[in-house]
Amino acid sequence: MTDTGATTTSSDSSISDQNDVAAPDRSPLGARTMGLLLVVLGGIGFIASFALAWEKYLGFVEPERTASCSINLFVTCTAAMDSWEGALLGFPNPYIGVAAFPVVITTGVMLLLGTRLPRWYWLSLLVGTVLGQALVFFLMYTSFHVIVALCPYCMVVWTIMWPLLWYQIVRGVQSGDLRVGDGLRDAIVGNRGIILVIGYVVAVAWLMLAVGGDLVASF
Image (cartoon, rainbow, N blue to C red; front, side):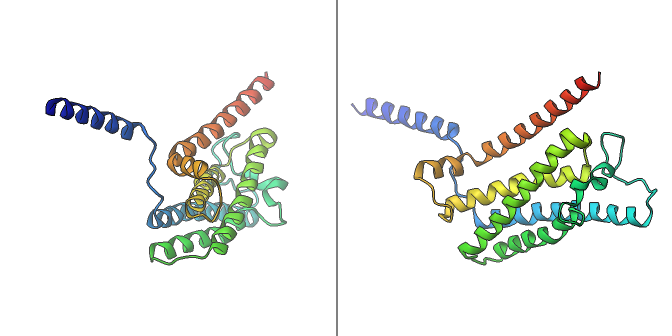
């Protein structure tokens, strides 16, 4: 009887271990991890935005100058900067990033220092990020289908905006700032890495389809 019980316990433990390995990561998103993400993503976004704003300034000073981020006719910042979409609010779009990303960085630093931020602050930051992501979607569509050119510095900002938005959603759902059912909360928090990757896959697929369509149309 003892041997049988031990065998059953061992078997159950083995199954449990296998389930733990196969299950998604359900560990919560920590405040320090969130702070580090905001600092890194905000820092990258600020650098890319500042670089593009600087290229725009140099273009004003020397109109005949070729931007340093222009590699060929398809990979170039010039087309985006010279289009009306590049200045939707009447001034170059990169200035928005130069002003907004320091807020993201500062938020991250406050989290790393242990500051507890109120719900209204998080929701305000999330709303701003949603608007930023909407602008990114518009600019991606413009680059893929209208201008048919890719701006390297712009793509850096596009790349960091998705995790910046997604992890704010994860944090909000986990903390209860964004109220959802228990099942949906567990799915979002536990599968946050998988969903992040899926977002990038969709974006790359969109780019490939757009480029492929443009190549076919050119023949």
